[in-house]
Length: 385
Image (tube, rainbow, N blue to C red; front, side):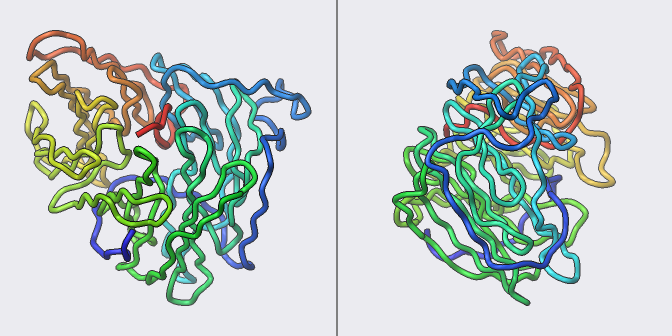
């Protein structure tokens, strides 16, 4: 990957996790294999029990709600729920500009992992247990963002050191998930703490390469920021393979195996694959204004268009379209954030069922099932791109 390019990003709601600043140099240790530790999410589960770790099956939306990470089924029920602690880092500087933080969750092809507090990387064991897997650097002035490879063998970690007065030090490394062997520091740089400062979020892997979001490091606004670019880079050398830039549009916040979209305020959306090629241009079936987010389904067959999620914006609405042309739907009152599968989308407060198999270019009714608890979207399982 080449040097970070500084470009502006566009406002949308984003996950921020909080406590306070101050602190010492980051340290990390590694576990040779998963071990049970920490309190489980429910009183009925025993921390001393040895859970049976088996591959997860099915599809889930990932949601953080009231201090828990939840795996949401397509029917809106909860398949697993485990407690998740917030990190110490909240602010970029003494002026209390917020540190923009990636979702502390990563899904492989058969497991879901999360960063618990500052250091621990843990794996979800349904229905309410988690096991320790490894650790990453983290303390009151350091935070790490991570992504586990689809085969559960490697972990990519971006470390932000915010202890500097005016700059943030960034380090991207890749190592074995279990034991920390074959460690490679593949990229280092510094970025300003001001509005021009940018950082990288590891958000997935595609055919052995890292998929990284280029985002603002600090936020001075009530809402967060979407990626200004998506990068795909070599996981050994960090050499850039693909760059997808936002040009007068807002890039997808969560990537798909099929790629990402970039939507403008009127809904016109350009679709990109991971080779960086334009695969199509589309838009919502009922054109309006105020669009702030788009997302491509796992196979690339369908796209959602969300509007009205910003502060002072009109009531939220999600429009969904199967390319082809195929069926389309409008859902008032909810903003989709990520696809669960080809027929279901996750919103912060609901699961939206889109009857994608309906033949023909016609309006269909998308059913909405409210979640027991609303929260912040953190991606989907499986996480293979």
